[in-house]
Image (tube, rainbow, N blue to C red):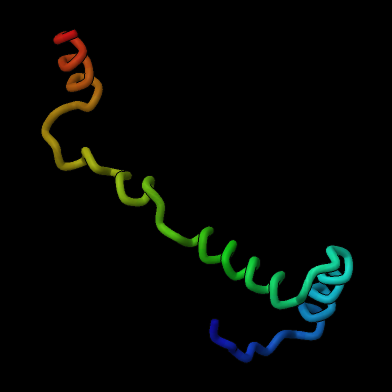
Length: 72
């Protein structure tokens, strides 16, 4: 695990201290969890990889689906 130095505004530090006190948890743990949540929120998911996947195909997606289902 690495250490970093982060500058916080006074109001951020006070809000963090209030969370730490209310939850009775170490400040480092709260900060690590906050960073992990921030990273997870911005991580591209499946939707980002698949959105617009059919836009360059020459067939309507619904028509293609119905054609496939005719085989059942």
